[in-house]
Length: 246
Length: 161
Image (cartoon, rainbow over all chains, first blue to last red; front, side, top):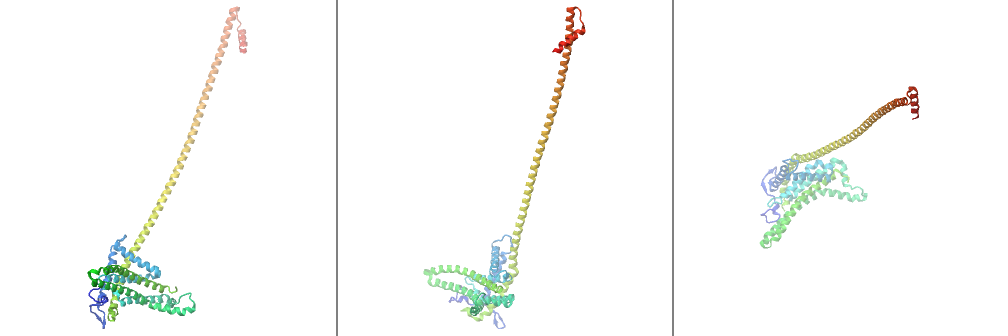
């Protein structure tokens, strides 16, 4: 939703704020980094301010913190089983990181770090590698059973096993693409309709403006939904790692 | 498309790693223990309160049972006392009645004895009077009287009575 750019994609441009260089690699503090910092600050603020009172009967903010805690805890218990408990802090962080990046991206003139494939792919890759390591650490070579569906005729296995393996390795790509594409498409669409409002002017601009309002509501919903989807899929992958013989 | 500008990848990944790790540390060290702690505390408190309520209810039930037992025993002892009372009163009344009966029959016997005495004495003096009257009558008619014969005659008449 950044203004100034002429193309709907201009809002996704990375701008250096503090140029930094480490061994020839550009690690500048950019607008993306700034909004990641703002996102974790906001998440921390919400969850610590809410719990400041530690009241027996929770207030509004404390309820938010408690409900999100139980929401993620239940999600892990239902989808990954009780063995998923040690990974609760990681998944809790994943959820809140994506949620706040997505939601803060809805503020006009802000930047959405999760609208960049490299960011979502980085997170998806951490989940994928982590889950694979957990799978082998918990089951040893038995983790291979994940690729061999049980109760299938031997002849079919020659087709199914390669499919299973491919689908396993496609996971980080689908996981990251889903989040990235949703964020980028939503923001691009908002920008395009924003452009319509301006170009159609005072007379006919009302129709795209009304649509823009509705779309903003939808995008806020998608911002939350995609954080949820990313987290729940991580839970399901974790479930596969903990119980490969499904 | 800015997303494909590979020269920004390193910076984005570095900052993603930094911010994510910081958030992870804050969540795992501060937020999650705090929220988890308060949830556990609340659960423990609620469980404790429920246990206490259960305990108090058991106490109340016990007190109620005790009260009922006492009430029942009080009732039985009251009934017992009433029964004893009735029995004593009945025996007492019986005894008194016996005493009064005995007293009355004694007095009746005494009165009967007295009546018999008086009648005997009255009858005895009647003999004497009859003798004297007979003797005086005989003397007036004959000029003399034999006491023994008079007495015999009176006695023979008296026997016929």
